[in-house]
Image 1 (cartoon, helix red, strand yellow):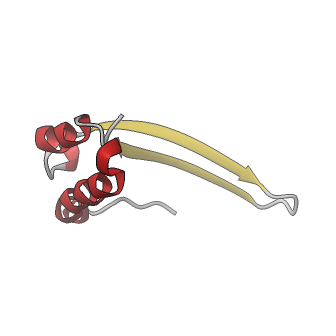
Image 2 (cartoon, rainbow, N blue to C red):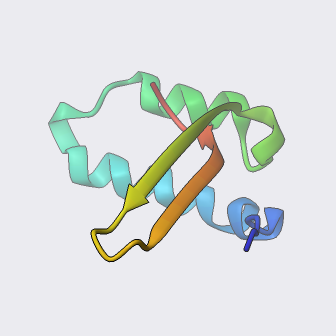
Length: 75
């Protein structure tokens, strides 16, 4: 099974994500947080990406492997 995020979902939701995260962080908010959205905007292709791999093996023999690429929204 495989899939990918529809770019329109990212485009339509990322601004609210940054706004809500900023509200949650309040005075602990890093000023760089605003910089990422201002610099990269609503286009997921403007962000840096990273890759990860997870593998789970259950004692009943079930094996699940996840390989994914994700956008770095801040670092």
